[in-house]
Length: 395
Image 1 (cartoon, rainbow, N blue to C red):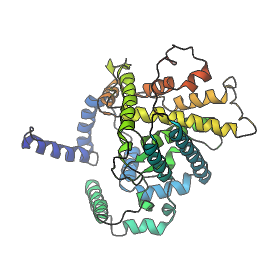
Image 2: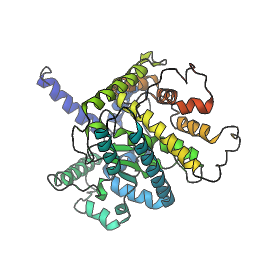
Image 3: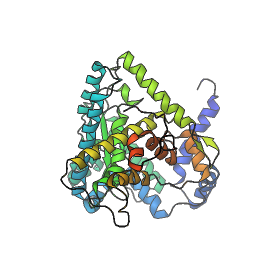
Image 4: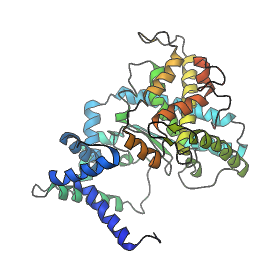
């Protein structure tokens, strides 16, 4: 800020306003936007108009569209089954906290307290089923048919910002139904400053979850994400926040030093991965937090599944045509399947430069090769690429 001219800073701000407004303007101006994006990420086509409209509604009216979505498409049984899975994985992570040999007892006590205090938001809040509550949110906003598309978007954005401003200096309620993210988001989240993990309804479907699939498939897919978000509460960022979400230094110095020694292993491991398509190395420092969450989350979820499977009197059925794979092998295959990805070279370059996540290929290779249980299940020889003699481990 101190070394960049005010003119450049002003131009940048104006450019961002213009760029963010272009998709709500004419076809002619949108063509300029497509040309710009083509040079940046290789995307040469504009999205179908239906997709653009749906994305706009999801962004600016998330509670309204989320309510319609869960009423029409979401299976209540999925919420119950995923809740059971989340609880099992949290309990497994607590067992890990109780046994890791590098953590002192004072820090361990605080860590267990934070895990116990972690709030889980699964699928949606029941407030979204109450039409009166939805109407209350938007009761003072009116669509004017004489306004342009752009003006309507600007008015709606301003209206929602005003609602947020009204919350300043009011008591924060973790169970407030409007805190829930859009149920149509295909993602998962850890809100560090609230100690809340969230799994919107839309990710509890497709390749991630289905009530009719064996548990080893669901644990490998959405379970991997659940473990990932839980582990985020104890990674390089999450460890700075205490059970109530407030910033607090609750780690003893000796344990903190050991944490960073283990984190260094992940940095060196991922830093040496080369993305052959673009001839660039993964940024081991930028991705360290997500890599720790991947590794800890995947191992925790595997152990949670094993614990569940051992508690059952019968083994789960194998999949037709894949019956030569054991349930635990299918857990790993399911976990890797969710990261099957096709990306343009331009997008890969942008991801390596700016994203905190490693490219999908190395989210699988990196985490799987660090977990002994993976190489045991597939009988990978010691010293082979997926069973290196030296492994990185945090949790």
